[in-house]
Length: 269
Image (cartoon, rainbow, N blue to C red; front, side, top):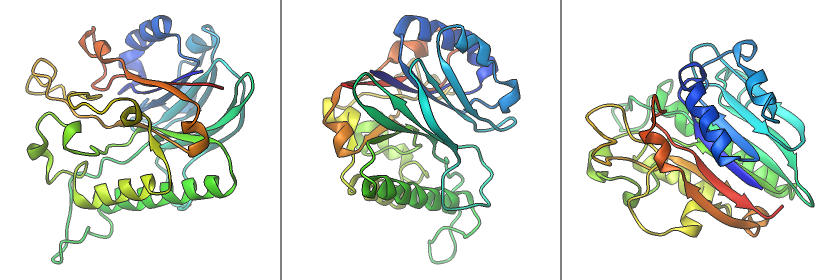
């Protein structure tokens, strides 16, 4: 089963680029982020014509996550547990049923967290964007703990807005104070991994220089000034079934691209 994650940065602007990639890559499942569309305006029929089941958790002008699947989806839920007041459309779950096994898909668009607002003690300001990011990561860890306790096979994939280590940025020093690369963000990331989760790309490839995002500004793509922030985290059961993980870098060079590119895994399901 080929499962991809793709932050498309606006469904309206990227529809042609997205469908071209779908037709070429033929993923079985796609977890999309940042559709920037309400549910009713999402062009589901275009994907249904290609054989996909479509589940949307949208929001006007911002955020929004989607699951596309050529295989049956069961028990679809929307929103990350842990904060009933959180209205941002950043998380969706469903179980996909393969030929012999199923896996719980957790599609996420983790908060960016910038600007980083700190108080006099260098702690995140309580109601600031960075505090929201860190609290969101705590909730994600709690959800992973719950799935592990239930012995549910799962993966958590999407735009994490986390640069895990120096090797995942072309110019790491320029990111030191950024919410994507601060020590507090890295600590939350490690807390997730320390549950026993496997980061799929690094399980396959150790070399530096692999990125999934290039800013539109300052010629970042032409200079290969990228960062790797789109990730798959796999529970032990799912990690045992990992066969490959790749980044479709070439999509960034096409007409009207997203600033992200697809990342995909193959699982023996």
